[in-house]
Image (cartoon, rainbow, N blue to C red):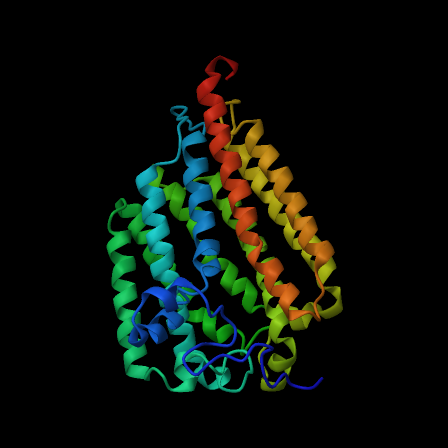
Amino acid sequence: MPMRLHHPSTPSSDRVADAPSDTWVYRVLPRPFWPYAQLARWDRPIGWQLLMWPCWWSAALAPQWAAPSAVHIGLPDLWHLVLFLVGSVAMRGAGCTYNDLVDRDIDARVARTRSRPLPSGRVSGLQAKAFLVFQALVGLAVLLQFNLFAILLGIASLAIVAVYPFLKRVTDWPQLGLGFAFSWGALMGWAAYWGTLSLPPVLLYAGAVLWTVGYDTIYAHQDREDDALVGVRSTARLFGSRTKTALVLLYGGAIALFGAAYLVANAGNAGPSWPAYAGLLLGAVQMGWQIRNLSIDDPDECLKLFKSNSLFGWIVFLGLVFSSLWILSFPRIY
């Protein structure tokens, strides 16, 4: 297949081709800060939102656990939600900056990415590394607000983050590596609340991994042609015309594992109530809508469906929040 030589909407010299050109970044920040905002993807909030959702799901599920020693029914800790939001923005930005440093030669050869700050020369390697350190320090400051177990668990995730950018060179499953990294919050939210781990967050983590592989496969179809030419591997290339079937298995597995996490947390009939399961059902419908509308040869449609996964995040989170509210409002039922 021929290589896409340009994006339908060619950016000016200080924009990037695969990002909106009318975001707050260009309206609020001084022009010298634009390349750094682009490195951190502040002009594309979907990335930090997808990183945040497993954190928020876990933070909302943790207070509903029928623990062996007690039943703790309550709403998610608001301070934890704020910390996870800030940490997701910081660490997603650091991860993207690190990824761009590793991939700058590949990015220079791909139509969608050659206008990014590093391959276009608007930021030097040294400047990008300094910005990476700054973002990592913000993430560390957030992490240090949690208990010791959660701090150590958060540090452990860095090993996966460090390896991820290289996976596309050696395996057809780099999206699985992204899943391991982006889903870590499913463990962190629970650890921040309880200071330990249990089976429910592990099941939630496994489901979030499958969800991530699914949505990032959709995203990767935007670059399928270019990736083949430069030798980058992906599940989009691996699945090809079988992508919809693969998504049924991935998304279906995610919903099943989320449901299993709720059931295990509900031991003794004290944990997540019917709104949580209703949220999962509605989320499954949203996933089905993605699969039905997917056209792997339409990059714009792939991007639209990929972004819609933040809606899925809201559905699952609100289902868990309303579950807590229901239990708190009708405690005698439980």
